[in-house]
Image (cartoon, rainbow, N blue to C red; front, side, top):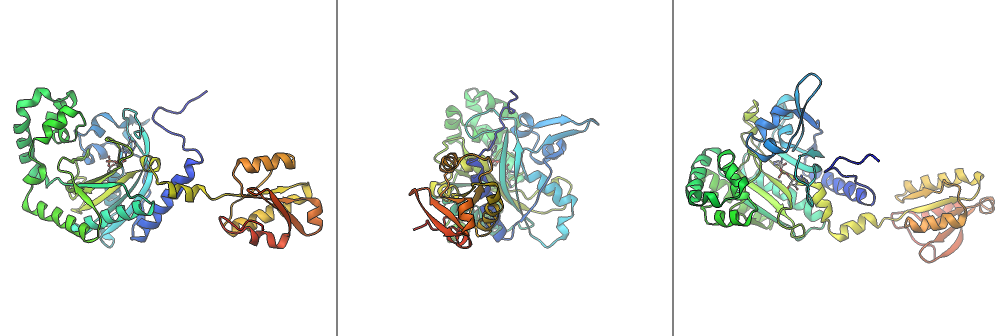
Length: 422
Ligand code: HAM
């Protein structure tokens, strides 16, 4: 037997309809706010992520699926979506279109990570990017879009955490201060953090190892050291969100695993998934497009981990998606097949789900199958019934059945739930 690649997943029914419903909701909400879909390649030049995400990040140093193609060019399966959006923005001259540009994407990302619950090597993200607006209002809009989407799925227990990373100019000062404060305890840091000390010291703030967390808790938060402009910006974002009644919590140690961020950064955590399981991450990245050789265009956005989101979907949303039950149509003889398919077509045209029995099994076996797949009704199309212009409709919950004129049956069973026969 050939098995799937470690860290990849087969999304099977009944989970797959949940994915489709989540994506439909994302299109509805983000589309409603003026975001338009951007569909980008999964394969990008490696350099895009080295320069975009950052040379010293875990993603670039340890987690990329990078390989040489047949001509020796270094390609990478995208580990995230923002760098690709920035590349496409530059390459397609999107700066010439009306600003700001509002874009969303849904699709697979790849990171060679250590496997654990909620962490896969191929995973899907749903993300939005707002390009060409540097005001705090833009940040408010993006976080509102996130909140609206999560609320539409029925979430009420998720917490949005936010921090101020300041501007890149603030960073050397902050890093120097952090190192000064941590220097006496350098040997107590975990192995990863001792490596981060030189490569990416900001990430020490984000370490999950308890001893590191304790040491970090005693250091001065980054937001206390940022420029007045950055401070004013993020405070305006917080006020804007408070005005909308969107709760966010300041998380003074929150840093993100990608280098392009400045000022506003945020994450959404689920109490159900525990410590490491962040459902969404995002922030402002005003230098990324210029750093990749494009115009000076600011941006802000986020990406939701769809695998993790689906894992903690509220029950009422799941019930709404999975509660739609089909009708089965059972032709009892060859001559009943066209009428059975015609009826199925009529039913789906009216918003129902309908499946025709095609294996040729007996009526008894077909009814058993219908119950097993959760059908709400079976429409039996037999030769006698057909001759009389009728069918038998069997309510599979009550086990009652009755003859109904063929012309009335689709209307009778129409809609996602339909009306059970009296
Ligand atoms: P990120 O925090 O690296 O940000 O990823 C965003 C989300 O993707 C995470 O919060 C998580 O839910 C999900 N995710 C990441 N890695 C995995 C994994 N191995 N398995 C399952 N889920 C995962 C970004 O990617 C940025 N591009 C977000 C952004 C957009 N910032 C601005 N615009």
